[in-house]
Length: 599
Ligand code: SAT
Ligand code: MN
Image (cartoon, rainbow, N blue to C red; front, side, top):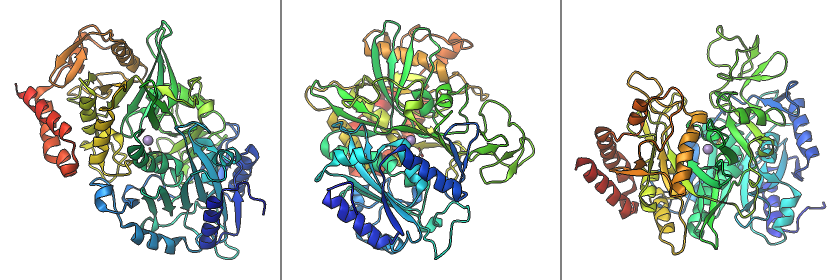
C-alpha cells in the first residue's frame, strides 16, 4: 500500500492499532472535501444522519440518549503517581488502565473501517501549533475533526519523516458481527465500559466507548487542554480554557482579550458579541481554547488551536448570538437538536415558535406545548466552521498569534461578585482565577442546582496535572524577567435582584465593560481601590438603557458580608484540597483579603 507518510513511528503505531483492533479496512484521511462528503454519505446511508433541506451541506445526527455529553466520572488522568494527577482529577495507575483498555480495544473495530486522521491544533506551521493523529472507527468523528481542526495530507507533510505527534486512539467500542450493521442507531459502549484516558507523561490519549464531543474529538479538551496543559507547564507556556476576542475602539486602536468562564456562562456569546456602543467592534479569534506563549518582545501571544465552533444550540438565537446563527446557516453538523417537517433544525429559545410538528432529539414526534420534555437535548450542539463566522477576525489564523492585553475570569454569580473588578498584580489575578466559582445550573445532573461550584480558571475538568502545581505555574510565569503580563479582571454578567430580576442586561451591553477594560489597558479609566481590588470610579462605566445609576451602584459595590462568607468557604472547602501544593502566595492573598474585609 502506498502510504501518505514516511514517518516510521506513525506507520508502526497505526499498524499496531490495526492489529489490536482488527478493523475491516484502514483509511488514511486526506482532509479533502470529497472525503467529508463520503463520510456524510456513509452516515446518511446507514440511517445515522439526515441531510437538512433548509441548510446547504448540513446534517443532523441523533446520538444514543446515554451518549450526550462529556463523562467526567469516566475521564482519567493516568499519570505515574496519584499526586501528579492531583486532588481534582480521577486517577488510575497507567499500567492497570492500559491493561483494562487493551482488553476492550481487542477486536473492537471488527466490521468497521479504521480512519487515521492527521490533524494540526493551530495553523499548520505555527510555532505554537501541535500535531496529533487520531485513530477512530467513527465517520462522525472524521467529519467533526474536519471542521474543528486542520486535517489531512498537509499535516503529514508538516510532520515529515521524524516529526513528533500526539497519538490519540479512539473507538466507539461497538464491534459488528458478521453481516451485522448499526440498524440506524448511534453506536457506543455502555457507561461502565467508557474510558476517556490521558497519559500526560507519555503525551498519549486513549478513548473508548463514546462517540460524542469532548469524549471523541480528541483534539479538543483531551489534547488542547489536558495534555497541552501538562506540556505547557514543562515548556513554560499556557494552555487555557479561554475565548479570544479582538476589540477595536472608534479610533481604530486594537486590543485582544482572553477570557475564561465555566460552561453555561456564555463564552461563545462573548466571543461573538455585537457591541451596543457606537463605533466599537468585537471580532472573534476563538471561542473555547487559547494557547499562549511569550514572544521575544515580552508580550503574550495567543492562538486559537481550533478551526471551528462546537457550540451549545439551545438558547442560541438572533437575539443572543446573531453571529453564531449566521455561522450555522451552511456546512454545519447538528447533534441532538429537533428536526422540522421542512428539513430544518429547531431548539428551545431559538427565538421563534416551533413550526408545526417536530421530530425530537430522541427521534419521536414532538409538539410545542403538548409534548413532554424539551425537543432538543440541553447539551445539543452545532459544529460550525470558524471561516463561516461573520465576526471572525482577519488575523485569527496568524501563525504568530495575537498579543493579549487582558485576561477575564468570570462565573455565573447571582450575588456578591461585582460586575467588574481588577487585580492589583499578576499574582492577585492568579488568586482571582483560582477562586472562580459558578452557580450550578439545572443542566448538570449530578450537582445540586443553586450551589456554587469552584472551577479554578474554568479548568477544573480540563487540567491534565495537579491543580496546585497549575496555580504555581501561573505564579511562576509572572516572575519571569521582561514579560508584559496581561491585566487581569473578574467579571460577572449574572447579578440578580433579591426578587430574581436581572440587574444587568448582558449580551451586547457587555461591550460597556469591554470598553472600560480597554481603557484600563490604556491606563485611562479611573479606578477606586477596594478590599477586593480596583473598581471603576463613578462614571467610568456607561449605563445601558434600563439600568439606573442606583442599579449600577449596586453592581459595583463591595458586599462585605457576602465576601466574608466567600472567604470562609474558600478557606474551609476550596484551598485545603490542594494541601502543600497550594502556592503560598495564594494563601497570603486569602489572608490579606480577609483582613481587609474585616478592617
Ligand atoms: O464536549 S466538549 O467538551 O467538547 C464541550 C464542552 O463540554 O465544553
Ligand atoms: Mn469549553
